[in-house]
Image (cartoon, rainbow, N blue to C red; front, side, top):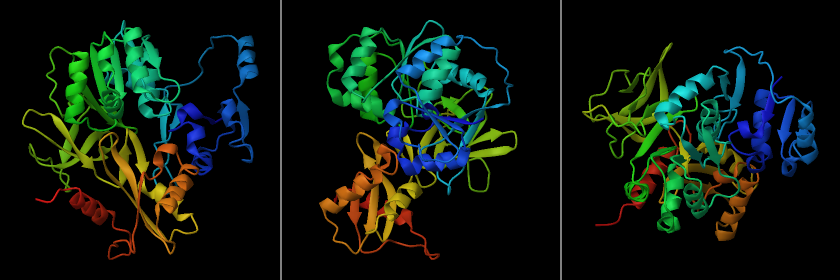
Amino acid sequence: MNVLVHKLVDVPLQELGPDGLRLRIDDCTPRLLLVAPSQADIARDVPGLTTVVADDAFLAGLARYPDRHAADTRADDLAVFQYTSGTTRELPAAVRHTHRSIVTLMVAALYGTGIRPGDQFFCPSSPAWGHGLWHGTLGPLALGVTTGAFAGKFDADRLLRALAEHGITNLSAAATHYRMMKSAGTAERYRYAIRKLSFTGEPLDEATRVFVEATFGTPVCSMYGTTEVGVILASYPGAPDFAVKPGSLGKPVPGVEVEVQRPDGTRCAADEAGEILVKRRDGWFPTKDRGWTDADGYFFHGGRADDVIISAGWTISAVEVEGALLKHGDVREAAVIGVPDQLRGLVVKAFIVSPRHGDDAFARELQEWTRTRLAQHEYPRQVEFVAELPKTPAGKVNRKVLREREAGASVPAP
């Protein structure tokens, strides 16, 4: 039986919206949906789906059952459907993880987060995101390590205070978390016990890196991977024999072969940009990221190779956001790209063609329209109304031209 639990989906259900939830239900066809009381009505009308509300009565009833059970699963049995943000019918199906994945995860955690028995570990990423689920929850618990999680709306000062009060020694967070800690302006109020730091989701800008290392007194280490292949590059937090190179993704973890390749499949030379691929049993698997290596074998990130937007660590599909916008009766055409943002790395920008006058009120209306249909983080933070969209010879929207226009507009005049 497939059970869809909101903590195993890419976002909590209250942030997902009915359209996003229905896409996932149609894909994995669960028989049971377990939700919090605030989510009780979100899927009541889905045929063949039983919704169980984890309220006080339900949780109290669990006390009647033993707290241990004999596992009857095999290593290759399905354990988790993991949906990356932006999964739609037009994109690859959910990643299916087997029970063997937890063993692979523990090995990756040893190198990616540097976690060891005795650590006081903390991961502020939501367990609804791959980082918070695998490296913030399943990995440390499987290794018998004490782990802390962040509940409620994120507040940077609250996190800083918790790191100090709980004597956290190992912190793994998204790059955006570190930027928000820097912006809070309260880091100097507390004393920390941090010995190991790691980040993931997107590159860390230089100013934030300098702040983090000055605040906590230890290098902040990159951990890079994908939902499909797990961690493949790391900077080995806490390892005395590994030199952390600022700005790099680190080097491959043991047992994993990673290359930067040209379009013809040949290996790129040092400092030559190409696509990052990882060796699998059936050949080279694309990460859809571009990058390069230096003469010392360190990997560097060169941006996305497709039209996926990474904002504050969330992976957002341009296709899904466009689809939601196009459902609005006043939107004739829509194109979505990622544009630079100091706090989030990238934010979603929508270009809209409409017969209606494009003003601030209409822009806010479209933002709210998207919020109610997709995840909260997927709405376009910027909206621009245009007379027409650039197209390819085949008639498809040319997002590359839009990205180039935005890049040109962001360069100050000489």
